[in-house]
Amino acid sequence: MPKSIIIFSLLFASTFLSAQTVISIDSVSAYIGKTVKVCDKVAGTFVTKSDKPLTYLNLGTDYPKAKLTIVIFQKDLINFSFTPSDHYKGQNVCVTGEIKQYREKIEIIANRPDQIEMKLN
Image (cartoon, rainbow, N blue to C red; front, top):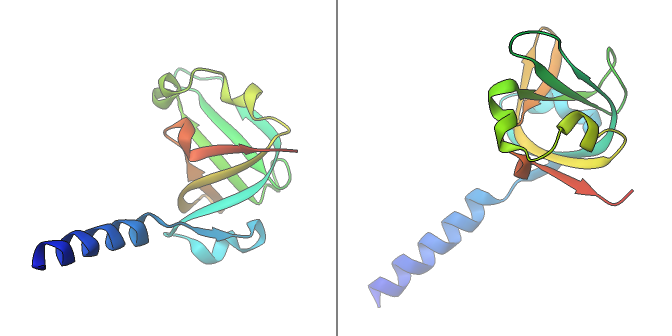
């Protein structure tokens, strides 16, 4: 009997911990430091021209007034079988990750494509 209680507890805990809070793009600044899921349209994309380019996917509105930016570092592009700036541009997506603030901009860093889920337009 105790073994079944332990198994049930572990299953319940893993389900609870893996659940993500889905928030509105308009409330992202209230969730800095929290891991959440945010859905909106990729209004614009940009890839920096440097030795280690960064890919920016701007949600809600385009830069400089993007409500949330998905940042993909050059070292993580190997995890994507496509070019994220082309693939996601104009698409409705949901991104899951930790909300961060960098230079007064709100962002989620995406290391893997499974963090960005495409939705039907």
